[in-house]
Length: 128
Image (cartoon, rainbow, N blue to C red; front, top):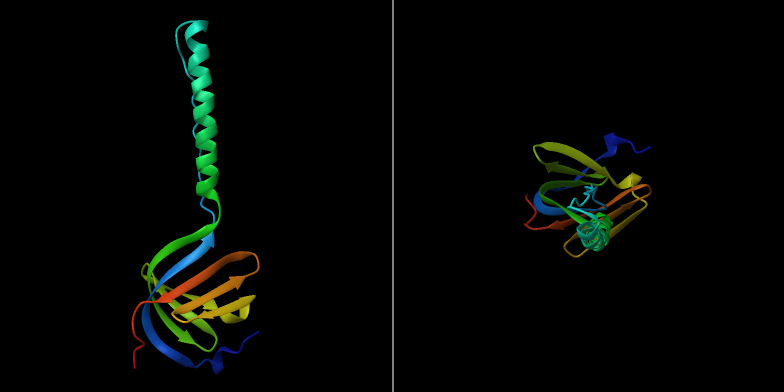
């Protein structure tokens, strides 16, 4: 466990953009064509089947994991974590819980076992 009493501020804060590598929950509605008589129902059912297959493919693609934007952040960087202001609340992204930290010229990617990866790109200058 990391001792928070040894925490030192490295970057007192700067604006950033954030992303998480994750899927998106999607829901599919099922519809049933209703038409008068067997002769009219068959073509509608065939068209519905084709449309359903296309929708399933589009929903599957939409649900696949990819970088999902978090939007604008304010990030304070310490030697132990990123303190992130997002949607009116502070949260911590602890370096010690990351399985890999990939520094980038304009940000950082943190990878976690069993959790979505987290990416930050700095959009402004460091304060202080």
